[in-house]
Image (cartoon, rainbow, N blue to C red; front, side, top):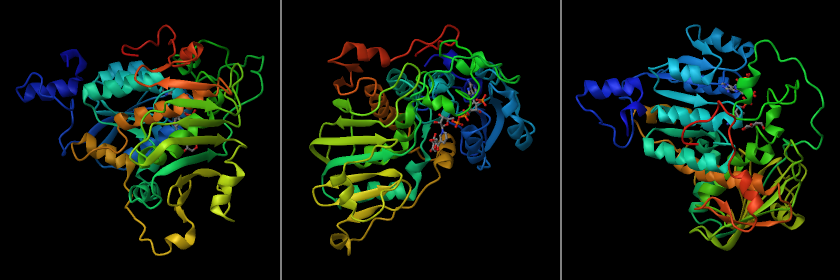
Length: 438
Ligand SMILES: NC(=O)C1=CN([C@@H]2O[C@H](COP(=O)(O)OP(=O)(O)OC[C@H]3O[C@@H](n4cnc5c(N)ncnc54)[C@H](OP(=O)(O)O)[C@@H]3O)[C@@H](O)[C@H]2O)C=CC1
Ligand SMILES: O=C1CO[C@H](CO)[C@@H](O)[C@@H]1O
């Protein structure tokens, strides 16, 4: 680690301790007694929810917020009158020399550059899902977090929920044996078949539109089309329904089945148009066998109006198929997991006397805070969240090439049988928003 890579607070700690480079595994982990100086990227929407959850700990002091839309910072200023508000994330990072930790809760396209810069400064990072917007960025953040030894956590709070933990524990307990297939779905519709409206609207006074665009190409502001929220539907900013909900819904699948990178992915549903993600995706992955799966295990994702086929839905009998969830088909039984609801083991008679694991939940945010203070570990560090995000983003990429089986070489981060697919593995950031290491 080079000295300029240390943040000032860490450097002072190091010097005070009489050591030039004392941080081998984790740079600048605060001692347990210390209150973290924390900054948020994003001041409204999910960012505000993240701020509230993190500052529920008495050991977190919110000192700064960056938000490109100053019109959306009134509430955070009301709640934290002392907070310093910036409009440009780069200015915040350059000005706030005493930070320990940050949350990155902006739209997806800015997760990577902001998180990468925070890591470079040795700050602990809580980054919203999906970790990044491209596969390459996910790989780079995973590596950077590990090289720099910071504490990291992705914002998939369901990972720490008792229901998620129960699904994982039940599969690990062997209740349904080795798993042959999983079918997962979300009824959300973060896509758009309509063309981009041909108009330019005035940029609202408080919004720095260039800053909002960040790494993406310049374009006219269109009211309601991007900001806030609808950026999820747009190719350059969001990741469609799959990217939006996949990191939540496939998270228990990924950890319960101890999946590694898929070897093949195929889209059989809707495709994007020139500007927006498609609707009604169906994407099937093939994985190498894991200790929890059979050879040839497949995972299929459905969204919008698409759902698992009748013979799969029939496995849950006359129960209602929830709007979001998963069905795990094992060699010895079926596990139906409605999203954030108790898992159901089937056939019911077989599991009547089964002692279901009932693990306790955890607070995903406080887990991060405590890990930054040297107490315990996070449960979704980038070493876990990076590969999970890569899997999800590979599915998003596949929707661009319907009815085509893409062979994936995860180590090389490359589609090996269709070269044109590889231009979507990585993005070229706009001049002025390039960040070292991405
Ligand atoms: N884990 C979960 O359960 C949830 C996670 N999310 C995730 O949170 C993220 C944000 O989503 P959401 O809040 O709904 O989106 P919004 O568009 O409503 O808000 C995004 C926030 O980021 C700010 N922002 C945008 N660009 C920048 C920038 N360059 N620098 C600093 N701040 C910026 C926004 O400011 P402005 O007002 O100017 O846009 C706003 O405060 C997404 O990645 C989403 O996937 C969202 C909901 C739930
Ligand atoms: O959990 C979530 C709830 O819904 C939001 C919108 O679809 C998501 O962005 C979010 O991750």
